[in-house]
Image (cartoon, helix red, strand yellow):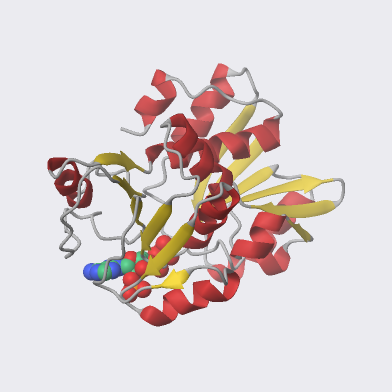
Length: 260
Ligand code: ATR
């Protein structure tokens, strides 16, 4: 029986096991998917278990997306660019690190019919997921990316990976078509202190629990289209599942419901 895991710390909140086990069952695949909380000094040995074929695939979440890299043999281009791994698998004798957050973000937008081609995009926040979002937006042909973070140094670190983006002072808002909240503000019914008076724009929040943050609620009231990060989450899982099991699992009503 194959064994898959998601590793992180904390890990209790993760809904990946529910989703993957649902798809495993639906596709009659004899495998298990569990969450496991690790300490940083346990990463190397845990990845060795993949090398020894004791386990068969690992999803990686906060705070290890970058820390696992040194234990891997090969990295996908997405990982090379973003410095972020969320999916590990074995190919021949090599342990490969891949990043399906990039494809997850794109597929989620396509699912919602949000077109970023030639659009100007303002990203708020500079946490772990932001390089994946930028990679994805650039590959889809957006016109311009502005990045704004409370702590400017973190935005500047991201600019080292993506020279073409513009850093904007926290609190300033350039003209944009799409604004993405990638900060953690909104997780606890708190609200971003931004004075935005716009309409007919797209407001996207990476947070999907709660499903409507104050950021999205206010945006909707002003007459903007809104979208949360649920589809990004489900599509990144879908891509990991496809890599490990050679099956593209269905994203249907039942699968979407797991994340509510
Ligand atoms: P991750 O776990 O995704 O790496 P993180 O590094 O904790 O997340 O990043 C969270 C993001 O939310 C950061 O961009 C953080 O801004 P700072 O870099 O200035 O800390 C942002 N953030 C958190 N609380 C915030 C607040 N009250 N106002 C503005 N930004 C906030």
